[in-house]
Image (cartoon, rainbow, N blue to C red; front, side, top):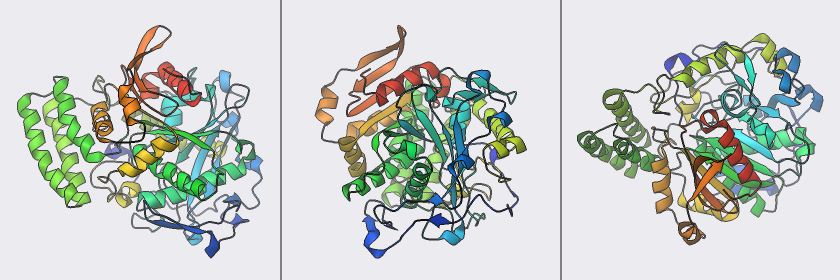
Length: 490
């Protein structure tokens, strides 16, 4: 779960009184016959099979075309076809005027391509940071200029970044206050709204109808992705196969929060960043967090566990960027500040079809403020595990890849992921454990280590990378994506 400094929280943002691109839905028939219960996350959604979900009334598809001339793109991608805009969500309460923002970048290469849906975490982080700072065909520099990224994921796929959930990035609701009911309060509500948003995007772009879809993301998206993917799986079991989901990829994800937090002292000790006494102190302190988890005191458990991690790094380790222990500065916070300025330029707003609606990075750790409604509304979810039954169901149903950067020192570290896998049981677990761990090479150099099979389940340790794998190892991240979506072994 990627946190930001206080200067990234946008407090007291002005309300937008201009009309949004469109607020109405067409062709949506909600009937009692269409409802089903999503049992795992306790959500009831009314949605008939075959309904054209979230089509924008009176909004021709070309209206979502990005105006490249306003973005001053690098020459190599100056004619790249992109779309951006809002899709309605929260169909049960249209009066809340809730919309998800998406930015779609078509592949740079010819031929049929899959669609990769990219999600950042937080909760509350904008997925546009993924495009601009990690894996897009152009990347934002400290100067505020865009540079060409030859290892952008659009080399292998169409990419759509969705600001998820409402309140992240450009996504919005008319109830802007922290206590506004337009924000999601659970993974179940998130999955429902994101599902509708994905249909809105596919409805606007029917050329994607038959494309294989992969959902990828990092950090707190380790919760978003299992939730939305299992939601799609449940729908397909009801006979609705409109989302052609083929696989999911989660980088440095936190699917089991306490397991992740409890791994941090051992990770730091193994690297010599803390001593045995400090490691022992941390494990003793974590007992209080475990007791709160067992008692389902979720908010208290998060504050306790997060407080222990903060103390480890602030007092014992004293490094500036826990998401890559090699870094001498918190470069990502600095770049996010640059992204905030860039994304709020009038010409960028015009290009991305957002009107005068502000962009904000509304994630953060610890107690939330008025500028961070998403973590405030999801605070009960922070310490809850993704159920084993959901994870194993996904592994048994789709191609699943978990990957971890070697030097992520946060609770999203690779040791927590590996311990989660040790405890997990699924249909192909014996085959996975019997498989050889391969040295993965790119252009003759070691890129990392892979275990399992891309046909079913694989786990990849990315060498010489922190939390942000596409940023730290762009060429290797692209190679990893290519192997995964094309079902090529490492």
